[in-house]
Length: 416
Ligand code: SF4
Image 1 (cartoon, rainbow, N blue to C red):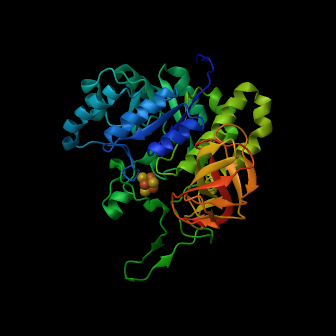
Image 2: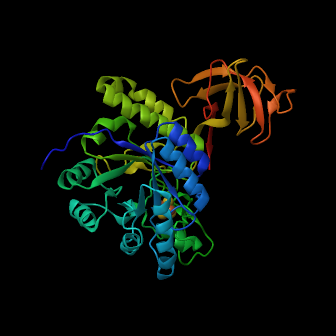
Image 3: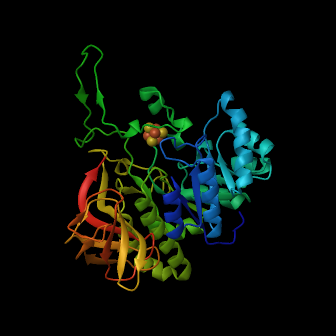
């Protein structure tokens, strides 16, 4: 096996809508992935209209960031005609690649827009270097490694092919094989493979006995509970050196339907971890706990390293409930900062009041804590609180802030 030159990986972030796109770009993403109104595997995400996609691509490119458009459904015959037009439109907009799982969709894209680079989605179950070679020979530029691969297996793929290898490093895990799952279609008629998963893997289950209709028997796994399919979230921030050394060219964060706040926190943490590691591995080692602590300030379900270091065991699942751990609330987004009087115009995202202790998460540099001493409402009048969603108020900040910095407040609860 030939050892390849080690390069700084791309940090690839989810962009569920325009705001999330702007935020993850400002917090340090090198590339974003997003879905159009059709053919992506996140029907519940807001997704981008044609106009928004065009604007998003323009915005990303003006910041030197690439845009990959997801088109990773398993298509039916009736989808194909519209897909051809869709690929032509995406190519015209200047997207940097399209993400595909289905060979028929791949062929359609190659026919309709031959110059549009194609990445092969994790849904295509890229589990070995021969299938990577197969896709490369057909003209794909990148594969996304199946989530069921160990680090050793990914390394072997990267060393045995020239195709780029992208891998998930953070976010929710499917309990089913790379998302190939019938639970949602079976229970609700909404097909996970066409972007409409209702997440039944997170539901609470009972068993029933055939002759005892209506009697629901609890399933006690080690007497801890009944959430038998409920995986913890993937988190690889403590393993950046191993990921880099394996030859993965793109570190992907899951979560197009997560909040803009989640995007900001995860992108900033991985940005710092990758940059620090490339500056000095010792610096990275020293700050490892800080990155992890920062990630815990976004919602999560406990962390696991998934399949990277072997098969996940019982510690990779949560048995007692399906709620997120949410240690902080996203309460405001900075829209502008007035240097003269040291005040920030804040767009409210959750109610906050005078006297609250808050923390600023800054896209560039260190965040800081402070108390809110006074609030001025949109009419210039003093107010006790900012109770209305998206209302614009002013507060004095302890340090200078910038547009898209985030104001958050500590809490301690679990949330569905
Ligand atoms: S139900 Fe769960 S395992 Fe199945 S596709 Fe949806 S998220 Fe994945």
